[in-house]
Length: 409
Image 1: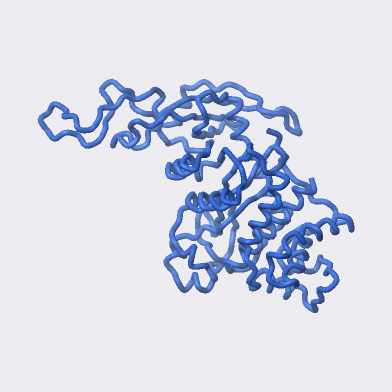
Image 2 (image 1 turned 60 degrees about the horizontal axis):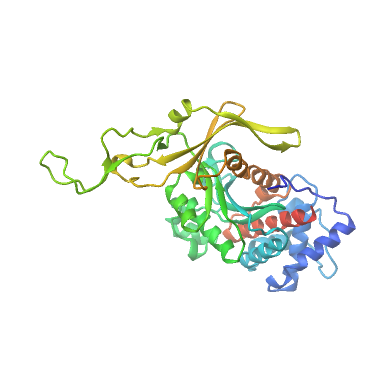
């Protein structure tokens, strides 16, 4: 699979602006008023313009209004369009995905999950609280949004994103009301559950794909992994080194058998006598040989690392017999250049080669570059409003801007 790692931001020449206008016109019918559609084109133009900040105030000073759109105060008009105007970002996002799918959809499509975080000051921005912030690499005051991205042989682009609401928000009706949070999402959900909902939304639209890739923030959840498998997807997802596995197939004694002590029959399976107990991934890696593998040519030469690709048996909850009878899974161990070890579980077929598993695992790195580009060049992290509507309007328009760049490339 060939994957473009990064789009490019073109100079907004008259020819590019004409193509941007044609692109924006695709989404015209998803707005209730003609002026809303015109302002969406203006906002896209502002996101694509050069400039360090893409919040509305500096953005409004860089745009050129099209014929038929007169505004004495473009900044105020854009504020109203993004934060208050009642256009449906979900319908617009669906149209965007369908439009991009005409170029990029493939049976080889891969769904990549990630968290996107937004450091914030104060307590009023919807969903903000002190939590782990990937953008800073530590706990901080921030918003976090689970997201799903699409990777195909011809390119990649973001599909959907939704804010995670911590319990301190879910339990505060007044706060939810002030931020305009819809009733449908006023429930406690894990980030993994939100990610699966986003996946269901895009797959209902007919987008093909066979594999899911995610980092350890999602992969450690057995419920998330089971959710992917139940949807008929293969996966390769990160996990942490304290997770435990059996390096050899375990033997189990069935429940209902007496243990010979005269007590009650057991109600749960237990490890058979002589079966080796599970080990942590950290301990398993310490005694596993990792081999150097080059997985592709990069712009600066060959990309390589040290890996092991093993078959193991899940060991979570082994003392209570919870993993009895579990099917074996793939375990990928990677030692990075700095010596740090990374791990991933996978339900790829047993005949999958190590090189194949590595290449699939690495499909998430271009996606991380894509989100970095959306933050740094397209202003994803520059939104300064506080409301649910404003945040998701902004996110939808940033995805559309990225989609235009993907099509330009």
